[in-house]
Length: 171
Length: 450
Image (cartoon, rainbow over all chains, first blue to last red; front, side, top):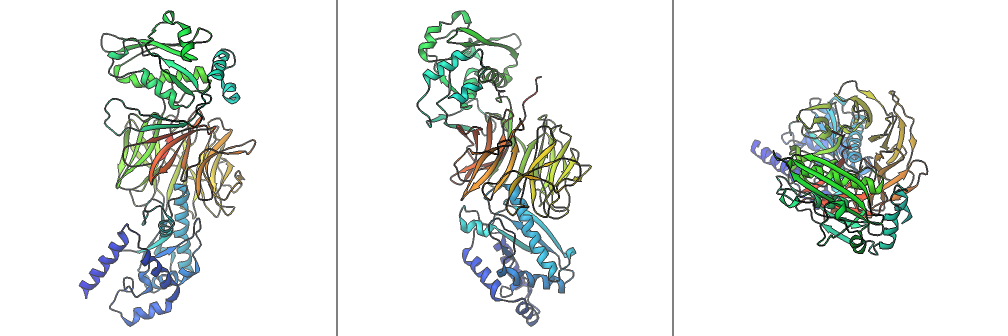
């Protein structure tokens, strides 16, 4: 079992580190966010206590990216349930710590994009604290446009890079 | 036409202006390629391509200096390249004519060639290897000497001497301060490596200041040109450093919780405006140049960033989204946090990256219209906006210390390059290296007389 978890974790990490955009995965990302509720997520965790809910692909907690519109830091409705699920996980696991990394697409000013990434991370932090997470569990930072996940120069790549990533301590 | 003439010192150069009127080039929009091929370089050299210009260029002939061919480093090719690159000059080939003293100049020859100004000179290698340079600038139509210049330099400083000669000629013929002896800083991303580099204004002599595998952004020159402030992500988050160029010693001057970025020097070099997320949002603070004495400057619930000081240090202009979209504002530097700021830009919904002009009368910035991001300037008094570029992704405008040229980052086929546009929008140049993405240009200050 441990080995399986290990493989899963490595798979997830390498997926995160991958520079190539995965449009298929993104679409799935968003639709899961809208269809699965936080309640379902925590039920899933309770039903299979041996599986890490943070890395279980069938659990909403394995979804780690919140996407934003151009020049916006409003958490869109379709990501509310995703953010709430993570907030409830933090509430129920007081020792858990999370790093929120805000990102921006490459267009426009690097410094403004750095500030925009900070706002995107702060917006997710604010939403999490409203749903039960403690301030002390969350650190929000910005990578601006400096660490693009998608390296293309088109709308699909830009959309992929306008996001906040949720990273748990130890991952 | 009238615009350029009005820039000339009225008295001595009427003749040259007349000459230009007769000789104006029809080729506005012609493309010139200037390949700066020089001595072997330890580091990548910037190539420069020039676009536009033409209509109001001063035709100038530069005769190779006496005994110049014996030097390891030519002088007149560097002078010619500098003047050409400014967009204000057209080089007239001297053909076989080789005067080196005013008495040897046969003026009708140069009138026939279409030259309005003529540069002649000589070099003498002294015992010990120093080189004595003498230069004369002649007005062809009036048949008089406009300026003379003499300097003795070590052989390894011949390029620097050539830039000073170009500055002298530029100043005499345009009435503006020359910027050929200044330096520029920029960031090169090559694969996973980021390096902050400093180069002469013509792209030669590039030297890495620091190199990392994490991003570097926002270099800013201290007003005396001895230090660079910049933002490095080497510690997994943005931190502001100040590095002394001569000693390479450096210090983190803003390393607070959260993000630290957007350094801007006060004109006296004693303080830096920086942007911190320490107290929520992104807000502008002041720190002393050693990082002590942090105090808050701006006070809004949104993003305040990209501060730029007025030349007198009394104001900063900055980008803020307090009105719902990023726009440029101006506030007084009072030493107390203030929410009072005057909005300056109203056209469009994305105006960012302001840079105060050296005369305090205007500012350069990036304006988005549709899906294009372009360099623009706005006059403080008239609020008139002029778009200077028509490319797609322009960033980080930085004004030359004479206010006449704006250096900025743009891209061609997905690769970042540096470009420069005259502040009246009439001439453009591209600077590019052989490899890597270039971005984040910052034009250094005028060099103080030694």
